[in-house]
Image 1 (tube, rainbow, N blue to C red):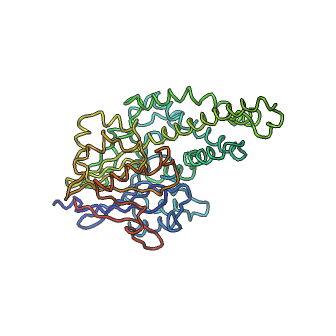
Image 2: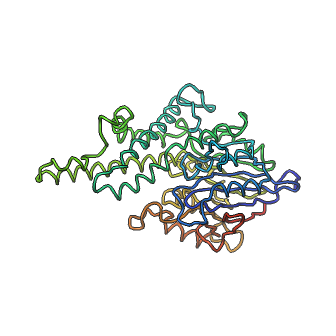
Length: 429
């Protein structure tokens, strides 16, 4: 084995509750190089031992001995990046990670913050891509207004309100975290990537090949653009009605405010109820679609070292996956994956069954079996009744039956040190 080739990769999945935080330590003969993939937790964990982001940051600082080679923020959802937030006092979890001075910070091309205005953006950036970034910013504004309206919801919105708050708050722009990530690495180390782009990680990790498999740009794949066109018809008119300028005069995006119902004749109240349900279902559909939209900006990375392949797809969903999986050479490449970080906390639409899962050739092996990591805390999103619970029960069963599963929800497998809990597994390469 060459001196500049790692002999193993140590993977730590921190128990952040519902979120992702993975530290990959590439072990070389004379040193280790560390890559942090995501650092978020949302909403507040149910387990008291989970989600202490400052403590986790300090553990990462100690583990990497004050130096991170790289940080990867797969996408902007709070459960993936809110730990990167800084504080005015400089003692936040994001301040601790920043002190590790990563050489490279990798984010999706949609996080090029000035790309919607006057930046040429990443190489190959086209007007359609710039419009996509603008659309993401508009979605944030929609969520902000909607959440303010939900502070005083009408009757019948309690159940829908819980889901709307979860999706809305998780998708809000965490400005402190976003700004920290934007400037955490030297200018030459800031990478905004898309399918086939140079990640900058290969140079930082000798003997390791890193491929970017997603997200595609609009110019590469119209699948995400198709989502945007579909959503234009669905919610941009509501966005206009609930903008900052119209927030006071236009009223909330609800069919009827509960405080006005006293003036509605009894014979008409059934109509108001039906109209209210229609709007409630529409708003839920819009915000769910927005959530999918943001997940499909997620970075997908494939690490190759010493013949082993480690796949980290963030929260990528089917529209993101479809572009990579449409290419025969990528399907062949993914068949030999050794380690798979389960997409989107085990949700139903982030691990394509026939396109991805059933292609993994090392499932069900007696030896050299596929290793999977699932970072999640159940009970926050979806329901078993609607078959939308996260993690999805049928997927978890497949993971348990057909791979060697490491889940942060399995207390018996967690290591506890310095007030944090994590799963640790070393892969020989």
